Length: 227
Image (cartoon, rainbow, N blue to C red; front, top):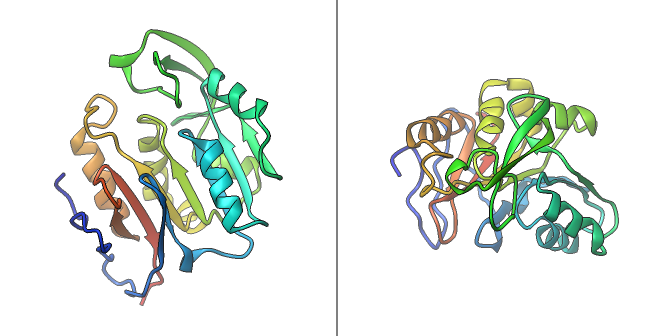
């Protein structure tokens, strides 16, 4: 992938934005697509996770931070029902909404193997379903979140709208301290390369950019203090 990101490196290599302070990090990789900088986590932290293996990652995060506030958004009916049917760690809030560029209703494309909100993955859709949707800004407003220590997104293309929100809204950006996101680069309909790389470049003006441990399809963005 072209763009201002570091090369994938098992030691972890970082690109820092101009006018920001380079500082030590302690990157914790909990699995292939879920990592964060433990030096940039408040106590207690807030995790907002949208789509993709919510149950397992919520448990992992809760084990490290027992007092964390964890909010999980899942649009797929089957996945949401599975999540709410199983015992969850205490104080995990689960909401059935899609992440989208508008608050209201959205036609969600359904995949043969439901794992997340496939609202942009037409090539794999077999049917559609109308689901409630919220923008990232509205999600933070709904839950009265002044700070999100970690925003985790794996929702099949819906991430792009939220990343644009963060890149273009200074107030929202000030609240979101870290972002870990999976770009399924082989699905060009959901992730147009020019748009994807433009968003990474815009975020690199404000966040350190860290490639995934085993895949450059995954990036961690960590907000760094200015000089």
